[in-house]
Length: 130
Image 1 (cartoon, rainbow, N blue to C red):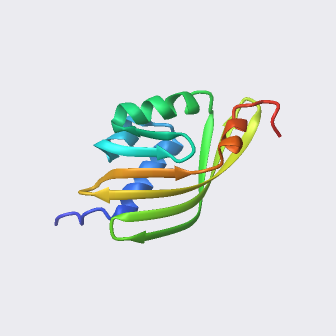
Image 2 (cartoon, helix red, strand yellow):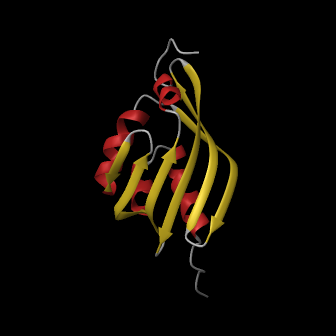
Image 3 (cartoon, rainbow, N blue to C red):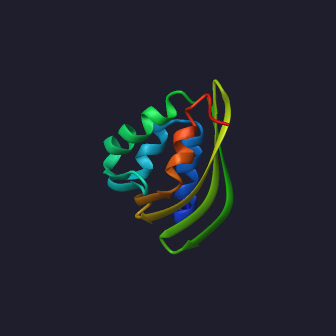
């Protein structure tokens, strides 16, 4: 019996599970080679190297992640998420509310956009921030 094709939601779920584990080697193959990744307040990069360049330094000092999915909706190849990204660092847990839009084609994420507040994100790595 053949396995059913993964839905767009399945692909995004597997991708986020890999990022919770901070496993770039498992996450990046779920992106198309020319995936467009946009942190809306920061800009756009393309491809696996671009994603690693942006997210590697962000995740490096993080010990543990939780992505709490508050709402999820899908319309064909497009998946919308409202989530709370929780990160544990030496100075404790920090939270970042994020809205995401993913487009999945042929089992790979081709577009990934994260919408969040840049000032809140900047505080994640600041031990003095409350």
